[in-house]
Every structure is written in C-alpha cells, then in structure tokens.
Image (cartoon, rainbow, N blue to C red; front, side, top):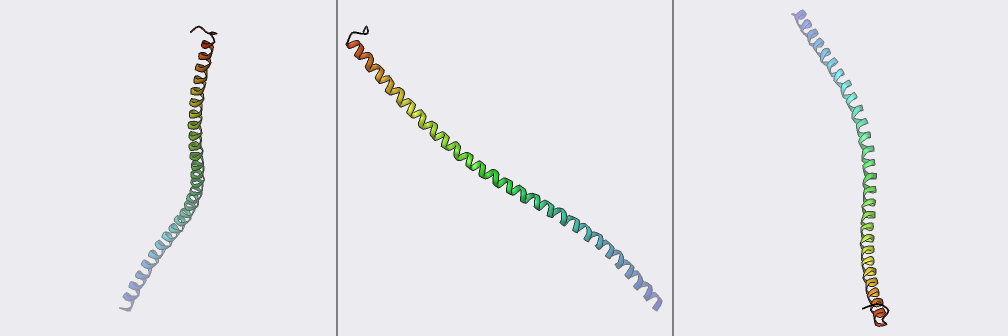
Length: 105
C-alpha cells in the first residue's frame, strides 16, 4: 500500500510539475503582454502630447480667423461708408457745376 501511495504521490507531483510549467509559460506570456502594453502606453502618451499641441494650434488659428472676420467686417463697413460719402460728394460737385452752368443740367 505504501508503494501505491508513493505512486499516487508521484503522479500528483508530476501533474503539479506540468501545471507549474504551464503557469511559467503563462507568466512569460503575461510579461510579454506587459512589455507590449507599456510600449503602447508610451505611444499613446506621445499621441496625447501631439494632440494637445494640435488643439493649441487649432485654438490659436480659430482666434486668428475670428479676428480676421472682425477685421474684414470693419473694413467692409468703412468701405461702404467711404463709398456713400464719395457718392454724396460727387453729387454735390455735380450740383455745384450745374449751378455755375459748367455742366448741362
């Protein structure tokens, strides 16, 4: 009976060795996965930094565009005002020329 117990104990040890070997392989795979995930984290960190830079540049560009729109609107208003003033002055000159009979009227 002692021999049967020893054989059973040996079988259990053999099985545990196989299981231990499997765990070692799994541990190695997990280590590889950890390394790959660490590399991915580094890449994502770099991408985050780049996106932050792009967002800052986008915000700055958006502000510049808004300033440009405002400048264009102001220039349009000033041009319209100048055209209206020029038209009034031209009409005045024409009327004065007509009054002095320098233009047919």
